[in-house]
Structures are given as C-alpha cells and as structure tokens.
Amino acid sequence: MNPFIKTVIPVILLSAGPIAMAGSEKDCLLEGTVLHNERAGEDTATMVQINSISKYDEDARCKVRRSEKMEFKLPQDTRLQDAPSGSEVKYRYRTDDSGQSNAELISVGA
Image 1 (spheres, rainbow, N blue to C red):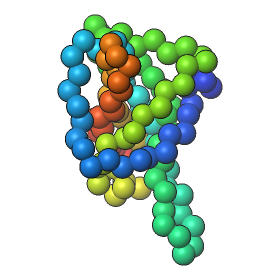
Image 2: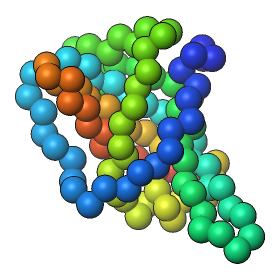
Image 3: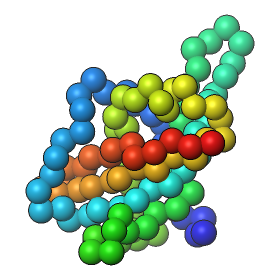
C-alpha cells in the first residue's frame, strides 16, 4: 500500500442519487475505513480514509498519479453514518470524458 493513496476524504452528503456515466475515463475501486469524529456537545463528522485504489474490474481504466488529487462528493447513505468507526467500505469511483466524477457506495462491512 503506497502512502500517496492514503487520503482522508470528508463525507459530504448529497440528496441526489448516483449518476450513470457513459464512456467512463476512469473506473476505480476505492477501499477505505470509516472514521467518526466525535466531540462532546458537537455534531459528529463522518470521514472515510482511503487505503487502496485499484481497477473496478478487469477491463476498467484506473490510473492515479502521485500528484493527482481525487475530490468527489460521497452519496448520501445511512449505512455509512450507522457504521461503527473502523468499518471497511468500498466505493466505485468513475469519471467521464468531460471530467465529471461520481462515487457510489458498494459495500459497508465490519
């Protein structure tokens, strides 16, 4: 596991569902860990620390350069908020020809 792929991505909830993308430029599987930032008397922030990035499937294109920054908004999903800290999660991250990105929660496990 390379250090450059370890990134903490804040979870920004959206009300819109995932957008289907045709002609995917990048199709990656992101694996990470749920982190809940709990402070007394404050709302909790849920974050995901990405631990690995790989091709989503055998035919997918997924190249990430060391200097490349991957920013995206995570879709609203109560499974993520309800998952205990340390839970493993998997996301499908895709970009299209125009640079639009989309992330879809695939699984949440213990």
